[in-house]
Length: 415
Image 1: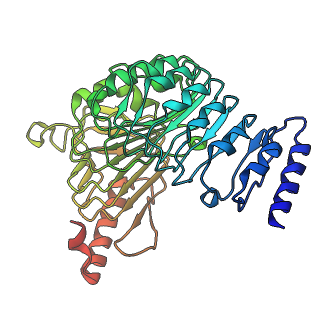
Image 2: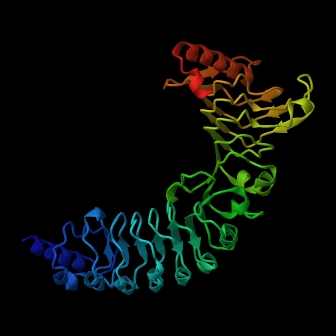
């Protein structure tokens, strides 16, 4: 009975897809063992999308040969589905989703699918992107993120994929050749969206400029990948997760930072001469004492001298989150202007007594929001009156947090 129901369902679907439009097909919940009987019904099926792929049986050569006309194939999260040799016969595929297939290690067989436009390899067990993939010259989107076994990307492959519009790739575990692969990425004239994870600063070529892109997500350092879904690549987002940020890096990647709508800094110890984006997010930087360092204290201007004027023109939002040794945002004694700053959030920064020495002008800032350890309540400290400053608000937060942590006993954990 179940076999007859499945046969009738497939026949009905095939009939409804005569015009080859892409429709959602809820195909095969429990495949019978005798899949050969389904071969004729599957011959002209154009689009097979699975909702619960982990229930699929093993893809046999016989079943694959009955799917030669398939255009879209979703095999995501088929965790134990190795690709049979007959997979190369699916030469009409335009979209292939292999996400989550940990048993997938070698993808050279995909080179036969030369009309393929979308290839998703996220969370798979692939070890390399081989030379053969360079034959997929019609690819418009390639996604290979969270691939923890990926150790090699063959030279020249990326540059051969000249039609790429969306590229999401993690180089975190690739030991060599990253610099050269990014040079190839920079030459992709049709690239529109980019998600990229690299292990350190020096693998990014000088002059790397993402301004021409409509959106990007670039992560430098860190063992975890914080990639957003491609739909969230509408703006520029930079994540830096490392202990050291050196001046040469800041000079080389100044364009990258300025092009970023949001920048997250995680686990940073010290920053020098940092070019600010629109949104600045500082998280879990246990050794950071100031966000922007303006030289040694001995050579800084005295508190009564404010001859230098610095303008952070684009900086609109600042989040400072769980940084136990953070004492100030800016260490110098200059006059600092923040003409666009409207949001400041300080969450669990118990050592921060002031925003910084010098004069800090924040004409649009109405309040500073704060949270204390193990307390979900958000406290807004108003900047009341014409003479109120961000230093007043930060100092008030410090005093309130000191009283709160003294009473609750949570302070030492975050210092």
